[in-house]
Image (cartoon, rainbow, N blue to C red; front, top):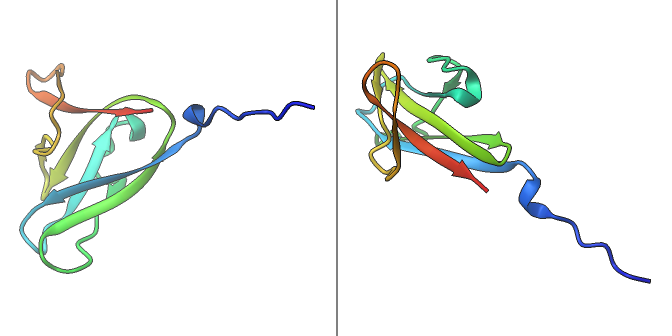
Length: 97
């Protein structure tokens, strides 16, 4: 009898998004994983120190995203990979394996 080995690389992964902003800000993450909805996934500043974070469960793949801080779209300063978008600016790129 042989033991079946599952391929864990195809399972959805929990991804944490994190960015620093002024305490009291309204911070969201938007990307092709939520149809670029600027108010779909709000990040929380649980300690009140300006570090906003939130988690999403994503299928393996490549995603483009931005943070929306008080209505202003911004790339992820911690992300090293970017892609040009149709608006002439950059999106952050996330690869989920």
